[in-house]
Length: 249
Image (tube, rainbow, N blue to C red; front, side):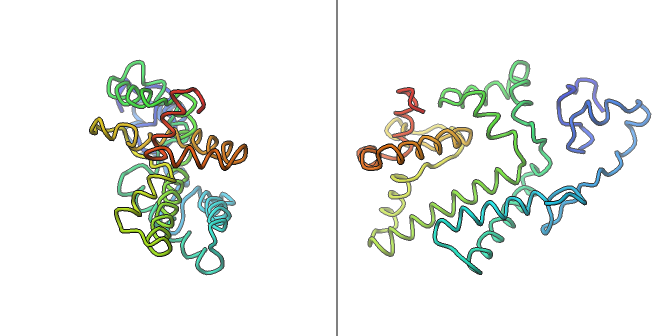
């Protein structure tokens, strides 16, 4: 156990707790011993604290089914789709080693920004895209599985728009992909790109909550004008960047 671990950092023992709630309270001799299990179990079928009711998985399944139902899914198809999404989210969490990230990870990132050059550079790139402190907290101060289910839902919505463009509008694959970019936000990590595609680049994940609220507000206020702005933009992401620069998001 190193001595430079911050009190609010994830404990190096891997428990998922803050250091000050875990091994900081143990003696140097105790720290050399494995930390007793805290009741957390991870399997492909369960995701949460033993004995906790309802589990995070049950909560997310119910919320996801409600939102996915709005897309026209129902019954067996709805349950099957949500279960596939949950399984993919959990498998990816294990593969990428993020399933035990603390639920205050946004606070941890902001605290480390002042002393950790790697974190500072990462957040600086996001801030250039309009990301604020509250966006970092909104995205990272939540259960890892919740973040991943949000991304799974985004992927499903994009796929649905793509298939609609292909099968109902007669679009080519490239044209259908363009429809996705035109009518839906696309998120990812900031990366180098050509100047021509600058405004069409993926948006930082941290902006998702603000962008969703903006879209809902515009659609409710004047859906026709909102659609006109979308059509006149090279992509939905370009419209978002324009509105961020104008102070509207």
